[in-house]
Length: 499
Image 1 (tube, one colour):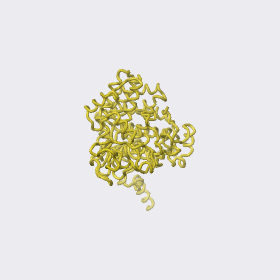
Image 2 (tube, helix red, strand yellow; image 1 turned 180 degrees about the vertical axis):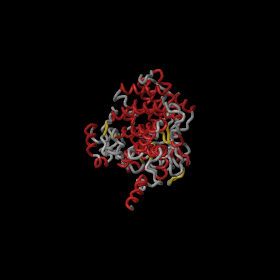
Image 3 (cartoon, helix red, strand yellow; image 1 turned 30 degrees about the vertical axis):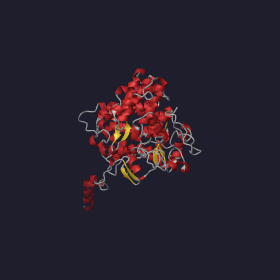
Image 4 (cartoon, helix red, strand yellow; image 1 turned 90 degrees about the vertical axis):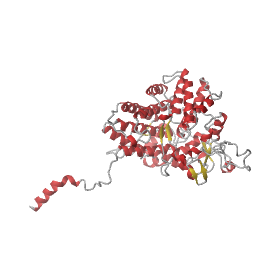
């Protein structure tokens, strides 16, 4: 009887036994809202913070005044590792948000996560080329792939473009009762009309980037993106704001708080000064100097850029005679002085801007693609330049004066195409991977080249990142297969769209 009673008791409560090992205060899954916030806060700084400060040397928006290895061509392996880390963090979070959003039939939840997934993968593939994609992010699933294959960049672009189109369409069908992400969305606060514009804009960016590799596909995608509506006003800019509380600060300001390694590149300063560009006083600070090492009075603001790629012997005289990055990107008090105000810690990081949207359409019009014609190019060019200047705090009047100069006024034809590319590079300040990618695509500006003291094994601006060393040990077969298709895992192996 005792045995039967015990059996009955166990049978009666057996449905509770599986919960004995579950801690109710430590849930095994997180809500989509928390995952999305965490994913954005993780993914964006990976390509706009640590990585951007290094890639800015390739784009020659900044130069190094000490710790010169990177400016001479040897990036730290940590730069590659930091970018690759998006797989285990931001991308993983976005994948779970998409799953939850689709399960709940909530395109207001899954749509933004799809767009951020595409943005993150676009940054990864543009930096490395072929990468794990179709089998990626499966390792934590039952029977999931632990050693994912590498997909070609062409196939990745094709799928990412399809995802953007599908996400934009789905978000348009979202009902008024769909709660979406709301305040958990740090970029648009759940505003789907702005997310749709971001989706179309990202699609246009990718279409233009592949326009030499697959002109027909690029033209089709570009036309559809433009028809859907791009980001063309600064009020719609895709950006991540920072509270500036000392924990979550703008990544550039956070770097400058403790390090005085960078000056504005001579290539950028010389371009801005030669064009009487009002952004020079925003992108750069006047040089700090004294009579002993300056030939002009400190009373006159003088902007002087630093030559990229110097060594210790040649860079030292320029430490106090070249311009630091603009005070808008400084935190105020630093360990080496006070520059700007604490508001620099709150500067947003930009993912896509109205300047880029307008200048993409200016290029499309100039080239007669994407459903646009040459006669439309000037208006888009003017709008793009104005958007960039006002985005950074300049005035529309200053933009109009700037555009009226013969050296800046849109000239059309081949000269106009060069002007569009140059203004795009200028507008990408702090969006350094985009600046580097556009230089790889267009070669504009032609003044970008390795400095006089570059290392012998890096005589030219690199064309891609190296794969992290961890891949050679944890995913060696897939890595070897990728190298066999794409080419050597070297800095000068071109990615698919880099023609």
